[in-house]
Image 1 (tube, rainbow, N blue to C red):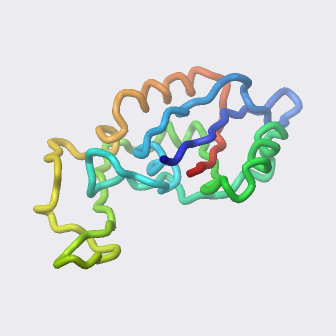
Image 2 (image 1 turned 30 degrees about the vertical axis):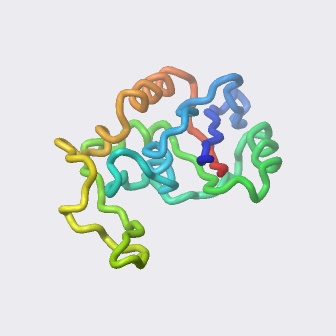
Image 3 (image 1 turned 45 degrees about the horizontal axis):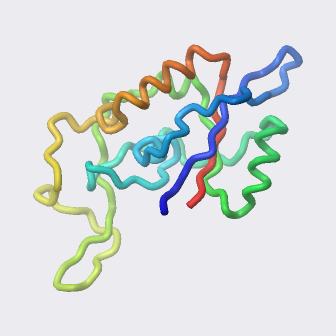
Length: 162
């Protein structure tokens, strides 16, 4: 089992009311690097000890969220977590050349779990030639970002389940 994202692209209609774009789910593929970038949620990928900085900690649903998205969020209740939103502008202007950050993880020493310790630099499963956020996200992310910018979306609204 793993976490999944529930994500909607929204735009303001001519009455200045937020609506979800029907049948469009940007960044809908499971990618823990994307989850970490969007809201600091879950990251376990081949980079192991480093993770993208979140653009923002979870903000909750926007007060003016579309009726459709609000209804779906309500149906998830407490099984949904990390509810948040990001503007297309925030996603477009983010510095993807930033280096990845060290991540606090569980580590084992002498049979005991050391919680939330920072792993030493020598502890790495994969050597990363250029450990930037952009490299961790990969081509899929940037393809999705381009599609989002080409749509009429002004923001994404999302949450996670496990």
